[in-house]
Length: 349
Image (cartoon, rainbow, N blue to C red):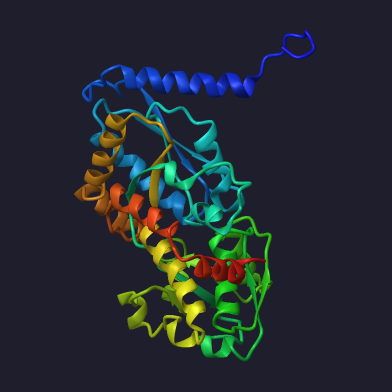
């Protein structure tokens, strides 16, 4: 009641309903055999429909129901914005806690609060991480028309690098290569997603793009790779990716001279690789449901039919347990403050 007028606080009512539903679910024994029977699950994807996260999610969603007792229907919903923060905030604040909502967001959505951005309406450590589908290796590439064909070229010649939004891998990896390695990049943000960036490259609006996942690039632009239309400048990996190493693509470490800079970039790359294509559930989901979903993801990521589909899509699969992802997030948030502060300086606009 405000000033005697009966107004309904819809936000508070919704939060109350979510809390009551979670409590009711935890108070009632959950039968793995029938809980999901007849239910529809939603897999939220925190990126544009054309990106690598959508490719992975669609492939997994086709097979995951077979490993969830009751075989629920799974629908996909893209919720792009702010490098995954829009989807993460919705998952944290609005999503039901009944095990029917899961999500996949870019690693940068989990990094935001590490940099002190408390405007993000969620605490990453409170999510339940269910699985990781790969160890992501991100690359910087230029198109065939560019005068910058190698990382050595990028240190002495200017290149226009396209990016999506602040906080996205495309923006932050370009900033890392510019500030920690010394590349002469001019970063132009504002593109909607990878498809728009690829069109801009082909038209000559930009020289290239950074922060693109190697596995997704193979799936999205196999002909460009086959026809050698792309110059791969550098791979963001602690240990060289075998395919990229065979192509002669360097890692960044010999180019980073400052010790704190190196530790900062290592922190970012280690987290990004371990997080990969991670899948998570909201806080307060009953433990029985979290376990059901973790076991389902573990099984589907090793399923021969799914792996055959992944092979056709040219996407890499490296299963990681949800418990391991949870520990990676915990370690990230316990990193030395000096290293975190320097990383923030490197990736800031």
